[in-house]
Image (cartoon, protein in one colour):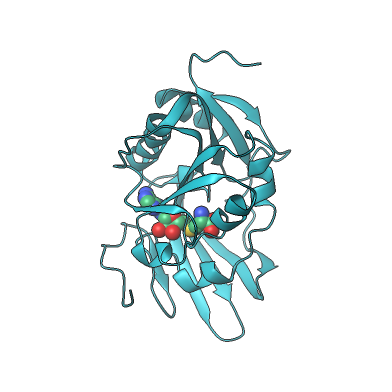
Amino acid sequence: MSGPETRTPREGYEGTGPGAITPDGCAVEVYTRLPAGDEPDVIASAVPAGASLLELGCGTGRVTHPLLERGFAVTAVDESPRMLEHVRGARTVCSPIETLELDERFEVVLLSSFLVHAGDVRVRDALLRACRRHVADDGCVLVQREGEDWHERVPRERRAGGGLIRIAAADPTGDPRVSAIRCEYVFPDATWTQTFLSRRLGREEFEEALAGAGLVVDAYLTEDRTWVRALPAGRRTG
Ligand SMILES: C[S@@+](CC[C@H](N)C(=O)[O-])C[C@H]1O[C@@H](n2cnc3c(N)ncnc32)[C@H](O)[C@@H]1O
């Protein structure tokens, strides 16, 4: 498949640069270039080996592919058909996460890439409900959230995949809890930008949002508390 995305951009989200841009402003080409980093290791160390795993917002399969190599059975969901074209070896489902209704439950549901910070609370809550709907009662949900000071610590940048990722600004919006994050991806041959909305989500607020979807924190998996394992509420831990 080629050509632009046909789905309408999400309000407050946009991207510029060559090639297809997803409804949330991501450049498909950028995600084919970025390495997986330590994310597959964080995930693999937090869940049972070989588990069935539902990855929500999988993009081009940057993290999907290393998870498949580690023996997980991955179902990869994204609303962008242009992203999904790059996913190999996993079952793919093209759908918004909010309305996903698979006739199956998974041992692990993965909501990464800070999607839980959606600018619109209704979207965020719908994402978390989709996690709860698709996780087995004895399974777990892994969520990746932003670091505590990310809206203040701008500009900041890092090198990845032969390019530079720069968080150029976190601009105020009409809602004091929401910033418009401006991100630049600078490569030798091309530059892309993405603007997206990010709602601040401190620990208490995050745990309340989980509870609203019938989930409870089991463990913060990393020292910076950006990776979280949550369980269906009511399940006994330990
Ligand atoms: C920032 S990219 C990250 C992709 C991948 N998780 C990674 O880490 O490489 C976000 C991806 O999530 C998808 N996405 C964002 N919001 C979504 C939603 N509500 N439903 C389905 N897909 C969504 C976008 O199309 C995009 O491919």
